[in-house]
Image (cartoon, rainbow, N blue to C red):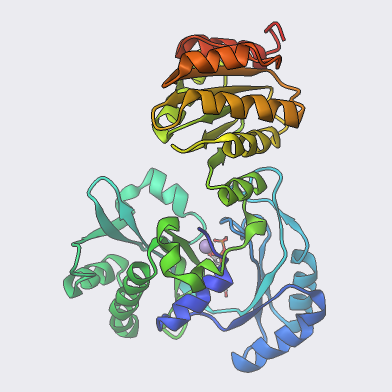
Length: 395
Ligand code: GDP
Ligand code: MN
C-alpha cells in the first residue's frame, strides 16, 4: 500500500526525523489560511506548493512549485489543486490532484538520496544512500550505480553504528550534519521495521544553508500482508489513487492486477495464472489481466471475476483456465454457466477445465445452451482465445 507525502511526513515526525514545516489542504478556500499558518509557524515568506498524488516525478511535471512570496504561493495552489498531473509514473492519463501540501521553502545546499528496502537476492534489508540525490536519481542508478552506496542489515541487529558512519562517509557529511545523520538513519530504519514498510525513500534528503539535514520528500510503501497489525496506517489508504477494478477485486478476495492486453484471464492459483499469461504471449496474444480466483472458487467467485474482467473495455475474449484440485470442475462449470447467463456476455469465452470431475463439467457446459468455446488442452485454449480476441474465431 502507498500513502501520500503529507501522510509519510506525519510518520517521519513521530519518529523524530526532521521535515519541513507545512500543512495540507483539499479546498481552495483554505489556501490563504494555510499560507498564513505555514508563514507563521515556520517563520517564512517563501513557500513550496506540492501536489499530493501517489506518483513520483512531480517536480518535472509541474506539481512542485517554488513560490517566492505569498501571492505566488496562492497562485500556485490555484494552478495545482484540481490539475491533472502527468509524470513519468502516472501514464499519459495523469492523476487528478485533490490535495496540495503548502510547505516552507528551504534554502538547499545539497540534495542526497536515502532509502531502505528489502533486497530479495540476499534476503536482507538494505540501506542505500547517494550524494547525488534529487530528481535525477533514476538516471544515476542507470548510468553510475557505484554512486549509490549500500549497507546490508543483519536481521535482529538493526542499522549498526559503524554502518551509519559508513553512510555518513559516503555522503561526505561534515560538522553538524555528520553528527545529525546517524540518528536520522537509525530512526528511518526503526520506522521501516516497526511499521512493516516495503520501502522508505527520502529523495531528497537535503542539507540546508544552516547545515541541517531535512527530509524534503518522503515516499513510504507498506507490506499489505502486515497492514492488519497497523490499523492506523491502513486508515491512510486512499482508494482514489488505486485502480478501481483492483479495489473491487480486493473486496471479494480476488487477486487481480490490470494489464494492457486484450485477453481476460480467470485462473485458479497464482502459478497457473502466471503460466496462462506466458502461454497467451507465446501464441501471439497479450493478457488483459492477472486474476487468481483462489483455491475455493465457487459460483459467486466466478461471477465476480467475470464482472471485474469485463469492466476493462480492452478485453476482447476471456480465457477461463481452472485446474480442479481442491475445487471441483463441475462447480466451476455451473458458476460459468450462471455468470454467462446473468451477465449478458458480449465477448467470446474459452474454457479449459482439467482435474476432478472435468468430464462432468464438460458435459454441463456442452448441454447448457450458453455459447462457450471448449478447449481440450492448455495450448489449445491459448490458441483459441487469442484467435477469438483477434476476431478470427467462429464466434
Ligand atoms: P518529486 O519531483 O515528486 O520527487 O518532488 P520533490 O518534493 O522531491 O521536489 C522536486 C525538487 O524540487 C527537489 O529535488 C528540489 O530540487 C526542489 N524543491 C522542493 N522543495 C524545495 C525547497 O523547499 N527549496 C528548494 N530550493 N527546492 C525545493
Ligand atoms: Mn523527490
